[in-house]
Amino acid sequence: MAEYSGEIKTGAENVAPSRLMMLVTVVQKGKGTFFADFLQTFDANLQVCVVGRGTARADAAEFLGLNEKNRTIIFSIVSEDRLDAIMDALESRFYTVNGKTGISFAIPLTSMIGKLSYGFLSNDRRLAKGGEANG
Image (cartoon, rainbow, N blue to C red):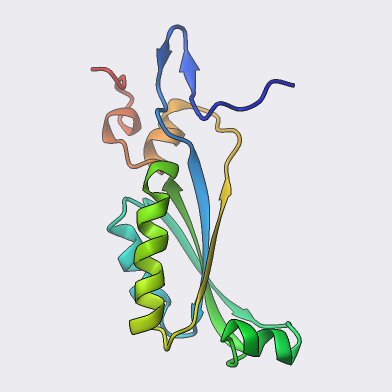
């Protein structure tokens, strides 16, 4: 199987210049709306917030700064080329807004069906409306 290059191709043109990532962010319960709004400023066009309850051992939760059992988990779709800026900004917000706690990590999306889906998830309005990336 060929390795994914991060580009979606139709014919000879590249439609998707950047790979999409699923960003998972874990914050204190009640802070989900703030962090979802904050992530939206980085063109995270699709976000889902769910309430989670911790199951980690007490010493692991203490080490990660997650003493409170209830938390909000935010699943966001972001562009890989914005990921470093997002992670740096989240680190700062974890320190100032979230009581010096929070976890965030990203998982690459390895496949996508359709230019319209990619356009919506990457917040590329030209593709989301059915237009071409180059036009």
